[in-house]
Length: 412
Image 1: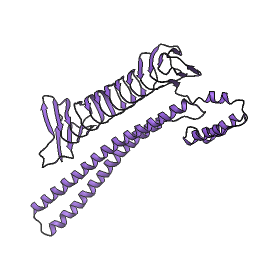
Image 2: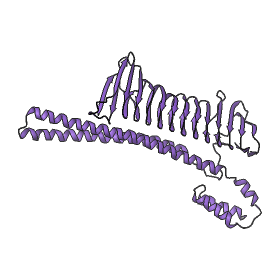
Image 3: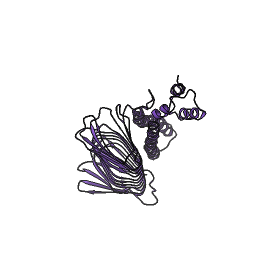
Image 4: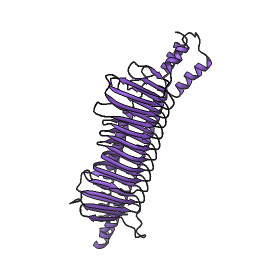
């Protein structure tokens, strides 16, 4: 185990040159940088390498690396062989290469060149820019601009205050509120789903490789079987360019196939944030209690050992050994907590994606055509009944909605 504490002094930027394991950066309200490496092997002679170069602190590590740093410090990450978990950073954040996944939360601006895994990002206070992401991209709550040039997986973006320019090889799902002073462009090779408020003012330019464009904003219900289509929402003005190799589906944020059927994804986002924060606080609280209990136990133990005649030097050495063991145990628990939080956030992001996918499938179920085709029937066929039961089983509709649908099909 190695650990270094470095006073901030004139340091204005932290450069992480190489990390052979995973990287965990966490901002805090202290004028110092704490660097930890739990997996260090003292026999190997490998150490965390630090170098002060004027106002820049450079760091390299052969294993996992944990760094606590002042919130406002600028950070450059050049190479990480594993995952990267970055949070609580208000300074400029530049990342060149991450071989695993990356989890971002509560950061200022982020500029990313290459990410081999997936990106899970939430609460970005300024701009989010990335050149290449090999996995999926799941982003929630960006207060600045979003520029994602090459995503090889799917992209899901929810709540962006600025404009966006996105290219993805998979499917795309975007939930946002367009404003007149921004421009929006997204190009995907799969299907594309867009959700906006029903009072949006925008000029839509749409291309669909599948020649399947569906628009359901407000009271509109348009199905266009052509490759290109132009459409004005409200008074128009804001440019929104949508390009998809597959289908394009545009709806408002109140769209519901069945009355009363709507997934509240905001609650899940709140749950994610609260769960992560509560987990960290609970671990800190438990570690604090453990440290206090340990001090009280050691105090009693020292008195007992002194009674049996151990020398003062022996007591001091024993106390130092116990203190070091306690410190290592606490730091190991802290590392486990940090890694656990990163895993939880990635799992919650995947859950959000499944919920989005379920909602999109439900949207694209053409209930109006289904009901129109069956309007003159007095009975429900077995095939129709099984379809409704399947939707009920997959929780796309409630029991009450299934009953109402059966009654509607029977003309009741």
